[in-house]
Length: 255
Image 1: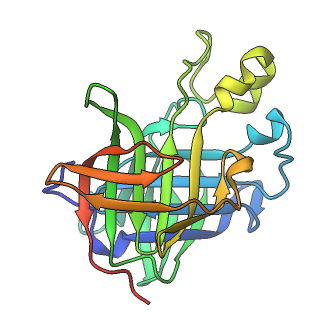
Image 2: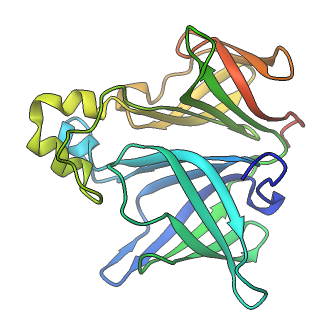
């Protein structure tokens, strides 16, 4: 997928999951936000019952980001949304993250698992369309990194992957909780993975939820400005300053 083959408009915005149903679970309480631009996605999932004051509790969170691909196998089948994860708080998966998508209304979409047995209901948050920005942070040599800044309407998500590598013996579908339990001395390094989500208004980004709980409730000043076709500058005490523009649709966010 590339910029000439964008994600359709109907997917743009921030989606709140209101239901997860599996053969053994019904979940309506986990805090989940999926931010979708015309190219990139960011996803954050925080179980409300997790004790995030401990490494074990923080390891129960989920979050990832990457490129989104929308396909339709045939006219008789529902669209397939595939979230191609470039970074992931949890260890690698053995199967793709993909689901059949059926829009019940413009602001409600049902997802049915392809590689797993689950059903999810997603509802779009008001004020999350109109503006779409996707940026990749640049390193000291000017090369893009996997650090991402995504904006959809009035919402902003920052994704910064961990710098440490997974332990050598990790296997697909291992959980972060199990990995942290096996490697307690590496726990903080493995958990040093930031996904922060909140509202950006009047130059202030109010963080609602984050994989690093200490960031929640903070309201740093933040300003994003496009410097050229391929470069943007972010003025913030928390984020890198120089970014590569992956996508920039700067229509005003709706009131």
